[in-house]
Length: 256
Image 1 (cartoon, rainbow, N blue to C red):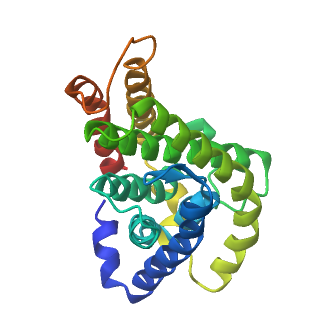
Image 2: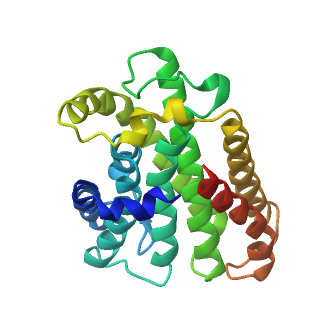
């Protein structure tokens, strides 16, 4: 995870982080007013494709850009709350996980750059987008529920479904169009282009554990509300139960 710190020494990476933040915020802000799902917390986000495709092109710059762009969107969209801190972390993971897991998923990995020119690349892209959306949804919903704002089951499912759906539909054509140009202009992060060579023999185990953390956290958090007569956000039972899954997600992200 040193790359997310050392990137600040590279002027080009700083510029790419700023570009990602500005693009993400510019697309998010209008929909906070026009199509809010839970006013003050989330809305329909066609811009949720940006962290995924920018991550595969710009590496760690997209992680910081996604986190900062979401925070800027909260500030200027009038939705800044204490829960925005979890939005920062969740969106950081949303822009961090894609480029870290690409080429590291064992038999699912195509071992090439994410140009989206084959069916196998599309499958790897969809799995990558699902992991990123799942981590983002679980972390944000856990924090927001713990603060007593919005139930975990409502927020986590909405973020997961909308982020993945938008990324799955818009991502492949956008990435296929943008990636070759970004590479031609020498904007592609070197780690993104050499991920297949760096993936390591046992990297797929970490990716598998990341999936376990996401799936378990999502299932446990939803189970607290499923069939219960009355469960209010802010209860420490859910926060404690999901905490090990959150730790596993963060640990796996750090180890990738």
